[in-house]
Amino acid sequence: MVELRKELKYPKKNWKNSEYKNMFKLNNNEKIEDLGDKGLKIIQASDAYRFSGDSILLLNFIRAKNYEKIIDLGTGSAIIPLLLFSKRKGLSIYGIEIQKDLADMARRSVGLNNLQDHITIIQEDFRNLKNIFKNQQFEVVVSNPPYISLGQGKINPSSNRAIARHEIKGDLEDIISVSNYLLKNKGRIYLIYKSTKLMKLVITLKKYGIEPKVAKFIHPRQGENANLVLLEGIKGGKEELKIENPIFQY
View: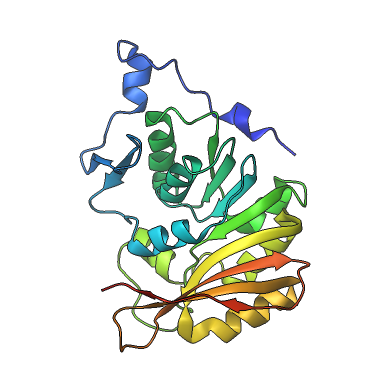
């Protein structure tokens, strides 16, 4: 197992330091956006995957506790680690992203906010995490997984967006399997998924010893069917599912 924090060496935060300036130099398609929370900022690219409202819904559903070790599978721009860190004390957060350009952008966003001692971005296929981490290392796993199976729907010509939406680089079972490996006993997983595939999600979680505990449905508007569901599962938890009040987006 490697000591991952040693891989990420950030130069001293000093804008007169050319190494620091070059590290956070923006590409032509990028800009810095204010997240509106405690001065946090994020780098976003106009022609790549940008975080969506799904990520914010998931963020607000996570019941993190102080000093927990958390891993975000498919972190994208690192929006969840950045905003989650400010909500509790002493969190240690890892963001896993398979796409090199997104991982690089996420890493620069972390450094831009001077959070590199607390948030670690790793460019890796989450299916390979058993080769990086020992088992049962995390209290919390977070994921906004792709929900469109291969062979269904039109694949976006943008590889960033295609990987985020289609199960090109791993499917739901891959995510739940590695989550079971990473989570401590009684550790928690937080997911957002298509509500029409809720039974698939529940069956897969239970297959890997993770008990669904809390579900919250997301509706586009009142009077319309839910299109998303937020779900909390506990590894080794007892059978008991609480359905929370729904969210109506508009």
